[in-house]
Length: 207
Image (cartoon, rainbow, N blue to C red; front, top):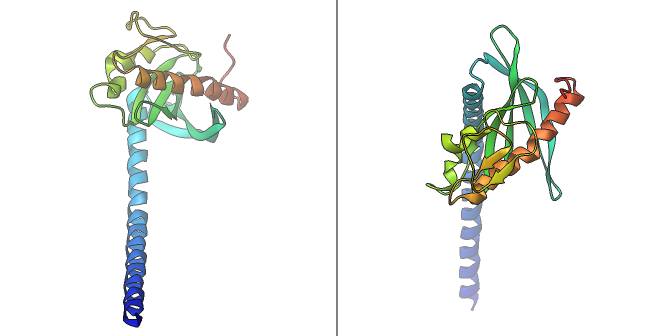
């Protein structure tokens, strides 16, 4: 009996030490890579913003940690970037936006014009949407519908003319949930972003 107790203690001690060692190893590895991962994401963000507002020379944060109400008691924060040309003139604004799709969180980079009246476009920063279906939110036949759309409430439709630029977005066949997720992201962010820009005097209220 005594031998059994001693054996149990010895084995438990080894398990505790092993758990501590591997936990420490994971923490060190995560700390070593977290900075690189964040830098890669920042570089990707910069590239995606540049691809949306092509005449921009640089992007500077004009509103940091801007609070966005996602509804149902959920809130998040985003940075708003102003795009500047080589001549230092305003070329528009960009910001990160997130929401829920079919397979989890979708993160977008959205660009709007300098008066905050029209959408310039969007790119997908991260997404786990289903290959061949939901991941088509990045394809031009769906993505292009947002280019020139009004900054206001967008509506999703299952049929219609996807070449017509207005407030109606035609859903991707077989991926209605993903399509809805993108439209919801726009509807959650656009008006709130516009309000923040107006309050800070970064744009004028255009009737």
